[in-house]
Image 1 (cartoon, rainbow, N blue to C red):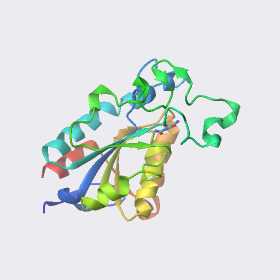
Image 2: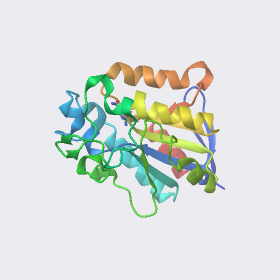
Image 3: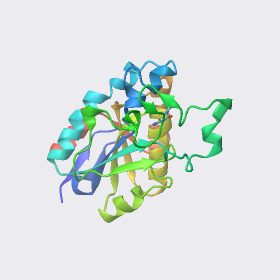
Image 4: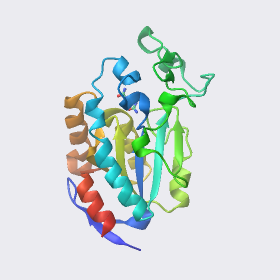
Length: 222
Ligand code: TIU
């Protein structure tokens, strides 16, 4: 047991490093790299890229502490049979499965679907391929966490108001204490970044906590 406290909002949180996992959400090339799908849609990927370096420092600390590290990727089977029609043709436009700058968009096995080199998983770190925004929906994340006795999730990744929030809401409902690191998450929309973080910690931490990479590293290393 290695009990510690992470400085967080709306209040500091006690955790045990042995029952804490680092969850890195969808740090995929298509969302983060210049000339990827995200940029093709007109987004400024630098707003997401600022999360890479702080996340890497937390990842290093988690690996040094032999914490469970889980990576997720949003995407679908090449035949798209796991992609709901409502997602596939949203707004009358079809992006998923079409040819993008780094292969078929949001399709497993394609270059753009994979995780950026800076945060690439190493052996022993589960990678969760998820068809939805939340990492618990139709995946084996919950049983992986249960089998390791995980109670607390430290959450990084993109985007703050979409896949990060969906995952934190799902995790909170399953009984996990979820801490989002504000400098390790990113949004294409600065106002959503700010409000997305506010929502989590409002009302006494209605579905989680917000902290920073520095506080997380301090807690993990203590
Ligand atoms: N990973 C994730 O958040 N998927 C998205 O589609 N996010 C957007 O903000 N579009």
